[in-house]
Amino acid sequence: MMKYTNCMLVTRGMTVTSGSVTLEKNDSNLIGISIGGGAKYCPCLYVVQVFDNTAASREGTLQSGDEISGVNGVNVKGKSKQEVAHLIQRSTGSVTIQYNKLHADPKQGKTLDIAMKKVKHRLVENLSSSTADALGLSRAILCNDSLVKKLDDLQRTEEMYQALMDHTKRLLKAFFDLAIVYRKFGDIFCEIGVRELQQSANEAFNQFGEAHRQMEKYGIQMLKRLKPILSDLGTYLHKAIPDTRLTIRRYADAKFEYLSYCLKVKEMDDEEMQFAQLVLRCRQEARGKFAKLRSDVLVKLELLDSKHVQHLTEQLTRLIGGLASYHSQCQQLMHDKHWFPIELDMVGTTLHSDHRNDSLQTGDYEDDEELLDAEGATEATDLVQPMENLTLNTHDTCNSKPQQEVRERNFQEVNLLGDF
Image (tube, rainbow, N blue to C red; front, side):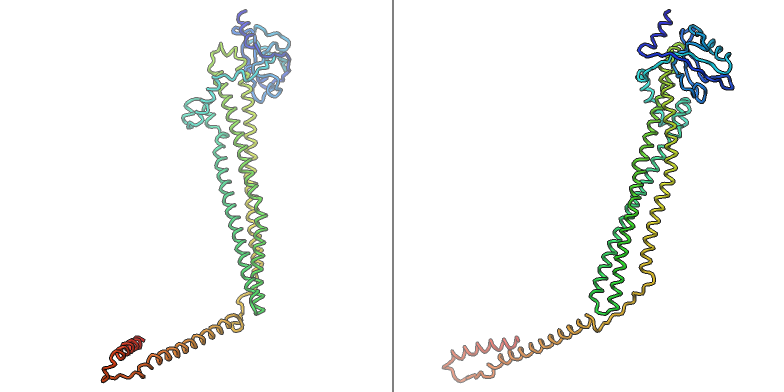
């Protein structure tokens, strides 16, 4: 009676509903479940595991932790699991299982022990393959999982797309700068053509300038067509790749949890495992979540790879096609055009006017020199004239003072003349 009471204590706080399900046997006379509990450890029997790709898994009613109350209408209370297995094997064709379904809350099974095991699995993930193989199967599967290693491939793909976006931005910016140069170049040539007097040269410069202006327009149109490539690459880089990375991380977390429950069941003694209905249910739900996320990861990775090939090819084709079209348009503008050499009338243009101005400036310079020579001669005459009119009286000593003043003044004038 005590053992039965202990078994019932496991279901305290959890809802139990009854029902029955009919399962078809396979060629091996199996329905795809493993049974635990029963005498001598517990008066109740329950489902330990539902195997994949079997009648029980395809039907989906039975789950780990569900109590088996009968087989084909026979009550199995107090029987051992071997006896129940024989009852199932003796039935032919199909078997009807009566059960009490356990509605467990998985949060009740997420104990501190499970959390610590998840942390340990995350640490083991960084170990090498040889070390993981030496630690055990679950750890080896964890470390050698190809889906988790896809994170490295995603990282490399992300870096490649980022580099491609940066290079495309620099390329389009360079073409924009080139278009601005074409426009300024065309404005300058058109301005030269407007000021040219000869008609042929005027037309050549204007047509050459308009061609460069048209090349600038073609460049702006090309940039408008190619600019969406950056947004498309950004969508793949900033949405598709992060979403896939998040799915892989969720899958890895679900796998850590599932392996933690597997390790928890493995560490239990036989007696403890007979009463671990809640842990078994949590393990099965964790396994189901893990399998679902694994399927999602496989689908997303397949879609991402196919989209990567298709998307990258499409964007590069658009980029190369846009550049090729732009260069073809520019080549057509310059093809079969005979603008050069340009014939210029060097006599009737501004060059002749400059020559006349130079002549005028040279004549003025010569006139200025003649004027300076005349002024210099006049000044010299003015300085020499007092010398000619000067009369020295050496015998008249009475008027020595006036004569001395005259000598001093004339001496200064002679010195000035000598300096000149």
